[in-house]
Length: 196
Image (cartoon, rainbow, N blue to C red; front, side, top):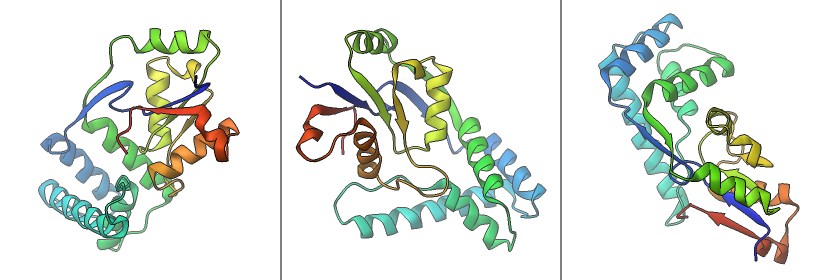
């Protein structure tokens, strides 16, 4: 029997639906960019964003060659969009923009049925639980806090806005390290909910 369980967050514990095509989202994003000196019309910004996303996806697919392709770093995409307008912004401003983008693009966010009860049973039976997500860890912590799930996890890990833990394998390795598991002892942990 496993003693340590590592859960993916989105699509496993939490059901999330986003819409990055909403006109309202791009109006707000355009306003933010404009306030920082980077003039984009909403449609122009969306098209530039989508182009950069496609470029990053293609580059990552080439780099990974058949293995799991990591998440696109939207903070890096936003940084590039500012650079294209010759505008310099701080890392905090980029992180704030990424948070705003995620918040506005969410259309639905809910727990899958039975999740709190399941996690409570795991914890009551002495199992050690962690979250390992390829989405920014700051978002994951806010979501687990929002749904009052943080209490069940000894560790929540994922990439930050500085590029740490760029792949899901890095994120899982971080969770295993937190559990103190290495080598053959890794078999004492089970990953739940990720296809890769």
